[in-house]
View 1 (spheres, rainbow, N blue to C red):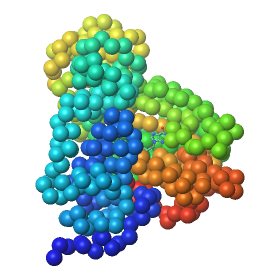
View 2: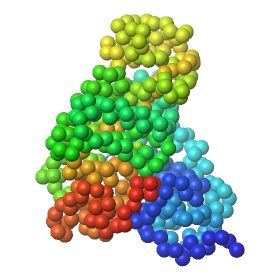
View 3: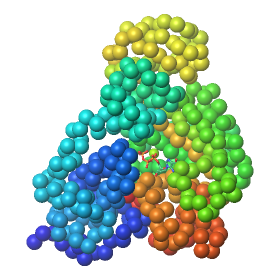
View 4: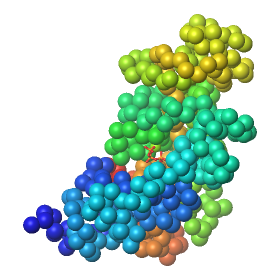
Amino acid sequence: EKPGLELAVVSVPSYACQRHTPLLHHNTTLTDALSILAENAELSENEGRGVAFRRAAALLKSLPQEVRGAEQLRGLPCLGEHSLRVIKEVLEDGVSHEVETTTHSEQFKAMKALTGIFGVGAKTADRWFREGIHTPSDLQRSGHTLNRAQQAGLQYYDELNLPVTKAEAVAIGQIVERAVHAVLPGAEITLIGGFRRGKQTGHDVDFLITHPDEGREEGLMPKVVSWLEAQGFLLYQKTTGNSYLESKEGPARPASNMDRFERCFSIFRLSTDNEGTEIQTGLRSRRGLRSRRGLRSRRGLRSRRGMTLVVVGDHAQKVSWVLGHSQCSGPRSWRAVRVDLVVSPYSQFAFALLGWTGSKLFERELRRWAVHEKAMTLSSHALYDRKRTQYLRASSEEEIFTHLGLEYIPPCDRNA
Ligand code: DGT
Ligand code: MG
């Protein structure tokens, strides 16, 4: 009488890249629980355990219906002993004791808060946690020396932790397009990451840039960044050059999951004037750094809307404001948004597109499939066939799936 018993006899393939995983699925209670444990493992730098929970969650996301009883899970792959135990507990009691303990643990909460700062990874956060730093405010008070990324991360903490909407991603896309076309007409810009998979919100916005005439894209990023900076669109940026050389990388070396494209990690200043989406943050109410009222040329102490602001530094976009008192509110005409830009040569575009569309687990599973099932090495640059000792070219994602002997999975079904 339990509906859906037939799940057990449906055969489900074990690699996430063999399955369709839509954004919306039927088992969110279970996958939310497993995701917490995965996150906790990742924050504790226990990668293997994190991946095990992620794989179990991804399997549940791909099922065509809700799991109501443990007997429906018989014969399904990817469900380790630990994950099964958690799933059974949630099915029977509605909650998992381990998940509850984790979400309430000081360490988990602190690690999440600290790694929520742009530029802070698990290692750094753990070191700070052991020094008694549990929140961004603790960190601010600690007087620790922070790098430029972390300073920006702290400064825009609240906003960078607000989800970026699809509308905001589209608005940023228009700015990126203007910038890219101003310095290289004919270049192509593609929205990648979670938004390409159909997500309605994201933690950042990712773009892939290329040009049909191979070589024209070389050195593009610094020009794009200069244009954006001159127009006042950047609050922070760090550009890294292209370091990919086939000869150096060597086909025999396992593909690193960090790629070597020219890349820019940035924080955009997105105007919210025209969209009626003004954000009212309690902290840091700063109206336009490049205000039309000529703030650019002024220096020193300023009093606006009851705040005392000190202008530090001498470059308009790099001005940082130190709040005289922190509790003030008022409409703001812009918000900070994390944006990643990646430039790919045209011949590597399909690989870059596949590698940057995600999800992270889907990517991981593609590489695992390639190595273990096909004796191939897949990266965001290339696909290498180790038996035939040659690179396999592709000009579309479909061709890459074909090379890998996989059914094509469209971006909207890569939400593993
Ligand atoms: P989000 O932004 O949290 O809504 O979700 P995603 O899926 O957009 O995640 P994100 O932005 O961290 O990364 C997008 C995809 O790009 C992800 O599937 C993996 C890939 N990716 C991110 N960073 C790197 C990298 O350094 N190298 C390579 N090869 N891929 C990366
Ligand atoms: Mg993203």
